[in-house]
Image (tube, rainbow, N blue to C red):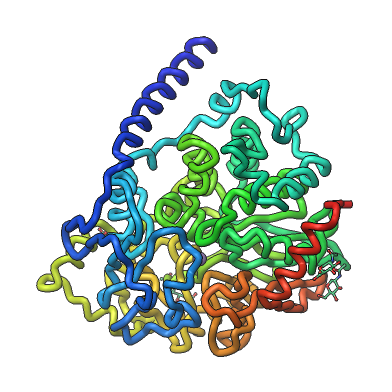
Length: 511
Ligand SMILES: *[C@@H]1O[C@H](CO)[C@@H](O)[C@H](O)[C@H]1NC(C)=O
Ligand SMILES: *[C@@H]1O[C@H](CO)[C@@H](O)[C@H](O)[C@H]1NC(C)=O
Ligand SMILES: *[C@@H]1O[C@H](CO)[C@@H](O)[C@H](O)[C@H]1NC(C)=O
Ligand SMILES: *[C@@H]1O[C@H](CO)[C@@H](O)[C@H](O)[C@H]1NC(C)=O
Ligand SMILES: [Mn+2]
């Protein structure tokens, strides 16, 4: 029986690899100026002055993204701007294969929001059997990288891993990874095993006198994680951490970040926590960097394994029954409870506004697009796209606004903005003192890496300095139990660099 199951898996893998070969054979061709259906198009040259700017929506406030020049975002090859009706166009500089192009085209058709129903192309629907894959891989005799003794992450392993990550050349050297694919799969297998048993909202209880540090988007900037540890100490059983999503894409260190964060989660499961962000998502990864980084060192099945594991990461954490932490924002729906969040489906990508709606959006003549220019109040009947916005989508993607009510989120293209009234109602109903969220680079009004909204009930933190503007800072929040008073620490790109330089020269000692 077992042998048969194994053979079946092997057969699946073989078919899969043939399929990958087929995809790879497409690689050399360049999709320059492919006229895609509808309003999408591809072109080889991205104008560098283009702003990532959502124009046209009356409700498009926001901090940062609106004035963030795309040319300074550290992404590999794709640039994006949202057209005035929120349907995005994508321009690709450099070469792109047809296969990449088609996936990207479909991703972008949703204004950058992902949709599992669009994932049928290519490899994106493959859910690898992590047990079978990790079992069948063998370590070659000439492998010189790290070992995971007895398949367990230890303090020593994390010290060696961080040491390997000090020098990026270690990771890429002759295409030989610092960590064998088999070990990556074991880590992913165990992360999935851990989270599969958990609800979408997880409770954290920080003991009296202990600190928890909440970290915003670090977007494939490993040096930011190093700076976080420099400021708040290495994770341990008593030094609590919550990484609030978007730790991959838009930088160069996708694997360093993902493996550091997953490694610490396995080492300290009761004091190290991870929220899913909108970039822990296969469709975002297909154009914003992760897939490329991962495929450069490993192979597509490993990349798919990460995509699969993303879907099991929780969407929210509540700290000491007082503070809610989510990556994006709050749902526009009335009376949402913590139980509703707890029960959001596991193992899936967020569903975006429906296909039907998308088709209608393509035909302005039959669909009243005016909903995008209106702000809806709590007692208004919400328009169809908002009615159908899942809680999961809002938790991952939404942003706050200053006006009361619900409005179109032009900056994201396919979800809502929520006003102070929604925050107030949610917090009162659920006895939450305040909400920490991330998701937006902050270059106004302060460049300080954080801002407060909704009477202090919404705290946004973003943890990449110089993300959009050289002078913008990174921020983290420290809170000490039991009173959970927030202590925000900010730093500049120069300060991050100093900490990284000192890390490179010192021996990594976790304890
Ligand atoms: C929300 O709660 C209020 C007050 O408890 C109630 O009157 C209202 O009907 C609820 N709305 C929905 C949509 O459940
Ligand atoms: C929106 O969701 C409702 C159920 O809440 C469903 O009946 C309707 O078909 C959906 N509309 C669209 C456009 O998907
Ligand atoms: C804990 O947090 C408080 C306030 O944020 C800070 O003053 C203190 O230095 C922190 N302690 C440790 C061990 O990091
Ligand atoms: C943090 O970085 C600074 C340099 O910015 C360095 O002097 C210091 O030793 C580092 N501290 C820790 C605890 O790593
Ligand atoms: Mn985000």
